[in-house]
Length: 468
Image 1 (cartoon, rainbow, N blue to C red):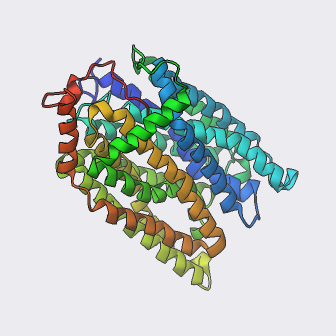
Image 2: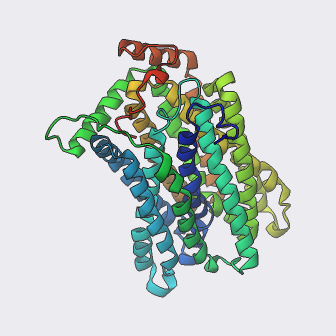
Image 3: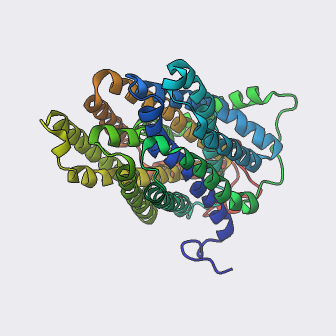
């Protein structure tokens, strides 16, 4: 088979493609459920008129993400000890697919009461989001296996770009469904949740078929409980990473600016609907525009980060985030004080919102590649576990802060808090030096007996990190 660009120049195009297909597949959950449809459905239909709907939504998000923070290392240790990392990832996909389809069955609070409705929603959504994020952790840990030190930025960007290509198709289908099948009203979105589940199941099939599983399990101390082993490994990873100054600073900065990224993931639909009056098909078209610019952001990051530097790329995208959130805050304030908000012009929202797409498209792939650059190949499991830990902890914290501020202090105050996440994160990242961080990783590899101009190319194909 003759592979198209950008796969053609890679030594393992089928592996990279099958790995990227999981990114494409799970977009149906992160986009249609978390960002666009279910978050708005939750607030505007299931809990319509409830004063603390933002807080309730953020609590479900926070609980599910905290479960990932706690159990993620344990799942990774089990997967390594049994040589079942791929099986664990696909099992998480199955659970997510089942629970995503079940979201279509949730009753509104006005039928069963607020407490019962919230409990039922938690029983379905929390395991769905938990499974999705466990799968994301496991997927990320495959990156050092399907790339080399010289291609890690490009391969990371390929996965991100495939994800946004899938998101683009999903949004087009969703918009057509709303227009062609009368699904414009929020209360009629239940079939779209079933569609999201089917998409995930079908598009993940190439990953199940072609992505290789490691042949040999990782040897573990006999008789050690996986939970104890996970705690030991996490503690070891924290101690080890602390000795890599630039990796340590990068992960701490990432934790802070990921507060903002994760908030956008879970609240973008609510922000656009509440603050700027975009609903139904207009909301989908707006997110479609953001998805196109997100794909552009991922492509640009992949094209430039290996040349201008990963740290510089992250800082550039953080600048975009800061300008965008400040701009949206200003527009939301002007619209709020306008005597007739419905007549306030929409074009600033459409224009400024492109920064959200560019930022979310570029920041993820640039950060993931930078972590890989600063990571010694023999410690990739440990350090990528910390990357996943930071991102999931941000998901458990950022949206909760945002939801509470939004319900207590108002929409404009919540957008100011969002901007602060990116400002502080950028200030912390300014202390990271890419050459020093990469050199520290290479020196650690040489000390471990891994030599060569591209150490990753010398690692056996059966190598798998300790845990995601």
